[in-house]
Image (cartoon, rainbow, N blue to C red; front, top):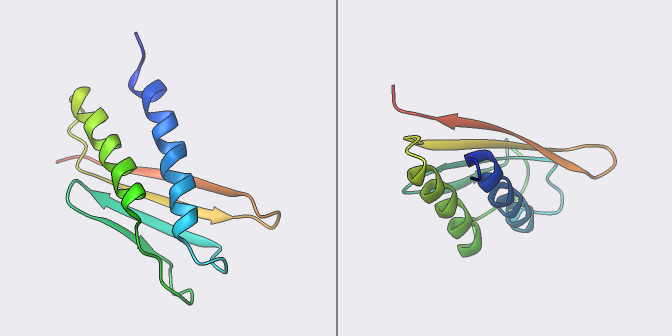
Length: 99
């Protein structure tokens, strides 16, 4: 049987790919903040704006549905993306659960 991590990995990849399509090309860092009700992209003071696409919202919703199926009580996510000198992006995820 597939684990949550096994199933979440391709969703995280899709979220990352779509988020990068939403960013201004000049950005080198971004934070995706999402709950069941909202998806927001912050640029930490960088010039320009990023707006979540319908596709990004759909992928984030898939993540919450998957976690619902595994009964994790996931309340929110915060993914922090950074671009290195070679142009490669990486991210760190912070998952929010009710207290």
